[in-house]
Length: 122
Image 1: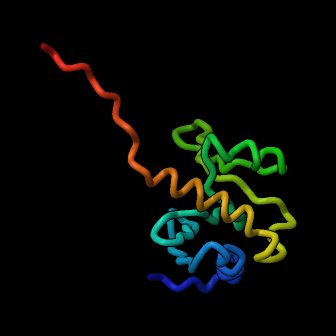
Image 2: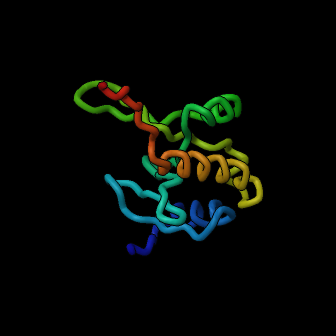
């Protein structure tokens, strides 16, 4: 485990600690933050992004969240991560509902997807 020395990474881990002990690791020039082995957040460009999915994304967008978008091969690419509301960056208590949504998205992503069953041939 890499111990974060970046003050913002330490702050983000403190903010997210309401859903469990956080582990921060270097990832693609930024940081990944995991709880129970599941990535719930990333830090890129000195910005915290929390994990989302199709079900939780409307909550994030209603709160004014910005999606994580990067450029690859000249095209914008969007990952299922969004910024929390600015006020959530002030305390673990204000971050808790957003951290729970991120953990929910991570748990859902971890569940095996159901395979389509094919009919049996006679």
